[in-house]
Image (cartoon, rainbow, N blue to C red; front, side, top):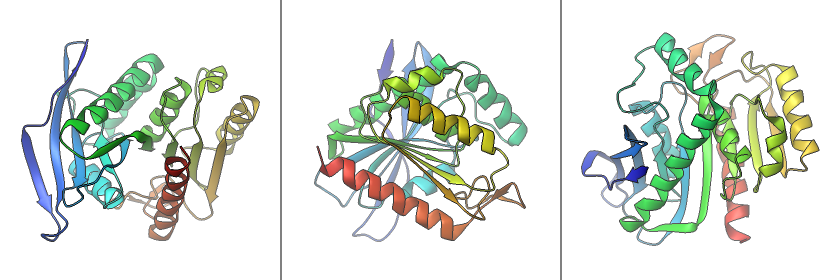
Length: 261
């Protein structure tokens, strides 16, 4: 049984008095196991706005992920950052993150279940935050991008799915026929973690399933181009210009799908 609890703890406040960005811990359970994600929203907005599930990179629920969510949310969205590992697993370095992410990636039904649990937690926040439950989407970064695509392949009834520099492979390409909403993949053209063969296989998968999909390949960008702390030359590098363009593309898709319902 999955249970979702409203957040009792306010972690931080930021921004001017007229636009308070709230960041709250949200504890929940999946099959009796404790998880804790993060809710991010602008408390000055009193009208319902769209909600986004955010699956972070392989480091999981971190202050950096919350800062990224604040940047994306603005006054547009309510964002819930999903915990894909469990409250007791908080990777402290890339080696620990690789181990945690690999364990989840090896079990795609588990990955899908945990991402879907995040969607349900997001929905539950409508009891306390003005949230348009008819306008929900999902975004993910790196490991999170692959998780969001698996959520889409499961047939989750969201309005749109966006992957930022995410893994595109899947052991079950035929599941793409379950996708019910537009897919937007924002990819670094020089990303060594997502080679051309993987991009080509994804394109063939989406085409065969007749999905409404787009893949934007940004020249000069490698892995983690939206991650401000990424600084491994040629492999994981923050690219502010590409990040801004990618966020603009994301907003364009959600503006389209949330207003066309």
